[in-house]
Length: 611
Image (cartoon, rainbow, N blue to C red; front, side):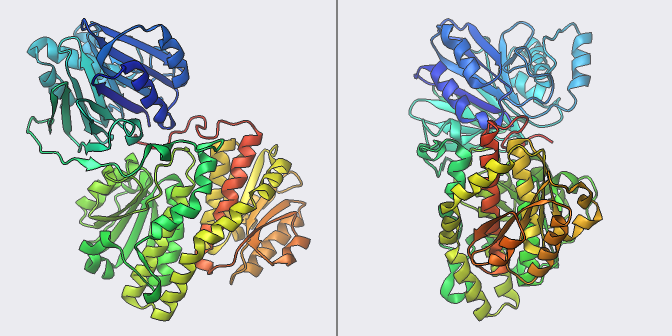
């Protein structure tokens, strides 16, 4: 949530900062702003409510040359989205400019103390309190870095910050605690950003700051140290994606591009891991914990949002193939309910960004209680990837659309691999393992078959896009897919939708069904298919309109439902990877017909880095 970029170098700085903000706008888009130190060390700033394009228009008259600047795109937490509350924020004398991701939890107490000391405030934000607090310490110590360190020791909560100042005009100071920041090391230029997409155009050489670390960037180089002032030796990493991967590539929206990329991203999630002839899986990231996971008493999976829905599928998969008890928890609840964990428990944390604040906090809770922690993340070098004992990258590549699509199916693919891996370590036979591995290998081509029929799904969306409510039903492996389908529709079309286990419809939701209620039923031909058909009969008896997801060749449903969307046959436990694709497309086409901002839906941000 929110995006930060800072730059020191010789390139034209305003266009560079604006481009960086545009690449991060999926992280927050309530308002945006920038600050630059010009050649005479004067601080020039512009802040604007709205999108980065609004800031760009306001910046056209900013005729300033400089080599140092910071910028920010905001997703509001404290204070209404407007010009005043937009970042950067300043000290009372307008000599320090600061951008901030995160939440300062004790800002109110600090603010009252500063007011009593004679300091004043312009905005309603917690961030301005930090800027003024730095000013207070600078007034005493006359050393900017020292003042920043003193201020950060006073605050509680999370932060990723970058600041510039007239006091020391040749440096950017950056620091993090619980909110991601990376340094970009270029050719006589240095960057700081909260997202790699903002700097990939300039360099692939990056340093990931750890919690309670800070960096001082200058034209001559950079220094990394702890906030406690101990120097740290930082390792330079290479970004693993290219600029082309964060462009639309001819698609109308990033979401549609990412839906159509799933044939490749599912294949990438399996590449080098699936041993078809052996019916087994090689997961190098689990090598260090192999014995511990084989002997796990219980597995707990914790996640948020779409990742939580993938975790629910993972529960079915692991219990089916490995016979290990699995529990799924919302990460946002996990740390606050005093969870009972044992040393032989294995806790899996799923996050596309690897920066989800609630999930990251849950890791700290699990570690304190002695559990082994495994991360399933997309972003290499992310906080969760570095905090866990071991992990598996999903290799979905950058996902720009706020509503997750390809990351979800990559998570499902990795969870399928993990379930097969655990099953083969325990009691799953080679014959069964080969059967599952062959079906996994065939999935990308089957996904492509579904995508080839996208126009039919668009036609169905055209019939129902003006509906005010949707109900999604599924059973077994596909109950979580009903949840995910409803979530996608809510996120990008703003239509109210609910997902339920199909049998639970009779326990309340059936009261909502009438001729105006579209009901999407995930009904593949599996061992509980007949039960789902009974649920469809119940809907039709109440004049509900039914859209069914079922297998090619299953013509029986055509007489019963209003629309059929077909998927290829696969093993029942792998059907979620196929059944979710039509639901993603249905949500996309519905939102497009309604004229929604599909890649940047209102009130949402891609990476939730605050609690």
